[in-house]
Image (cartoon, rainbow, N blue to C red):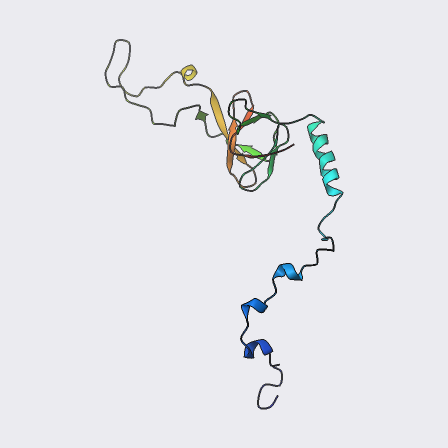
Length: 169
């Protein structure tokens, strides 16, 4: 090359405009006749044996996964009869229970209300309902990988999942 940098090679693509119709897609460059290196046809059988060992060969309605990171949360669960997107389980994995929070069924967490009038036998001021009248206590359950809330744990230590991805077991 005369009068230029001897280390720099001229490129044809820089001098000629590229026609978009002449470009080759990545699908044209892939040879599908060769099996990918990351595929192992025996791996599914090994995974199935592991899951059956974990479940002790019991059947489950679904395998539950976190909706945010797809981490497996439960291998053995029962589907709710009425609410088909909800599941309950006793044994879970990759779950964290928030023991510092309490949830109650059907009621939002509110500040205590002030009583409007003083009736016989009642005091004025803040009202605190009795513990037994407030309903069962639930604790939030989160994915231990990404902290997404996926369900609750009841007083009997049964997990109730409602924000999960079920898959066939």
